[in-house]
Length: 286
Image (cartoon, rainbow, N blue to C red; front, side, top):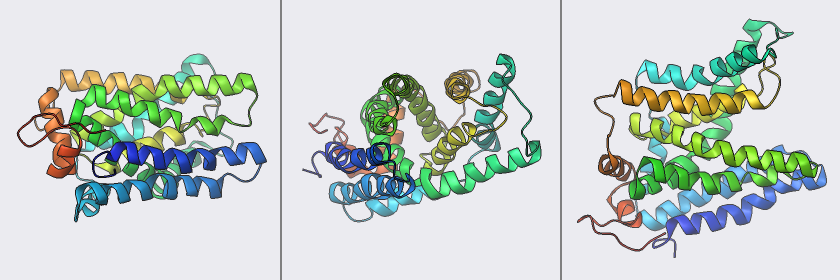
């Protein structure tokens, strides 16, 4: 089944292990950290690596993990990834009157943000989370459907698997949390899909972007949960507009180029698993 239905196999394993792992802290009141490690490494990373090997053969895991080390892309892209989220989050806080001077000072605030993004977030958690979601799931869906549709499809299970994090809240808070996740996810996966295309499939790029979103939600200077969500939506729109206005020469353009680029990241065997043969004819897979 894994060779013929790699995405289905991955999602069954991820939800079977990850759903309960994320729900346990909310139900029991136990510390969340051990269960988050189970989620990251046993529910996401391990199935992604195993199914990659089953579906694509020898060398496929090395090819996937090699993309976590791909850091050579433009300084402008790095600036967008690292600074876009906190800048827009603080801008929304300032515009709404909720911006405040952090007790620890702005220098400490900046240092804490960089630590949460580059060390704790990206290296400890998001690099492995995005190896599964961006490197495995979204790359395969983009190889089959292109940037827009591939990103939107990825957003559904990506949002759904985060629903158990809302367990333990009141019904009102639970509903609001689920709504925010499902509204934000399509924009966010599209943003990460654009980064993948413009960086040659770098999982490191999207992991740092993911960590930047999480860290922006922990800024003392911008209390509240809505500012980083609004910032992520606006950043997505700005990056999309920038790609139209100032297109990068090496970035894939058009549906077929997007599919070919994503297929190249995951290899010819994975291209067939994504629903296309080398001759370009569709094959049934999921």
